[in-house]
Length: 108
Image (cartoon, rainbow, N blue to C red):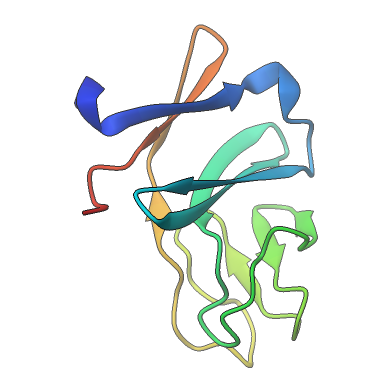
């Protein structure tokens, strides 16, 4: 991960298990989630209803869309149940000195 492509989005200690925090990077809404102590970054928009996922329930490596209940795998972005059939974008995450860094190199 190139240092120019990494942005700090917060401190690990500030994101408890089951919590998420939304950001906008280069006009792309991103959601950083803590599931079981593992940190993920995904597009903050359901691929089915185009609703934000920010208030979605986080459990066991997935987040549920609050609009229609589709669960998305936080690691791959794949939908785990209908109605969504398209995956959501995921972004690499690193933890460095307690800081959460998201690789945004794929965002124009």
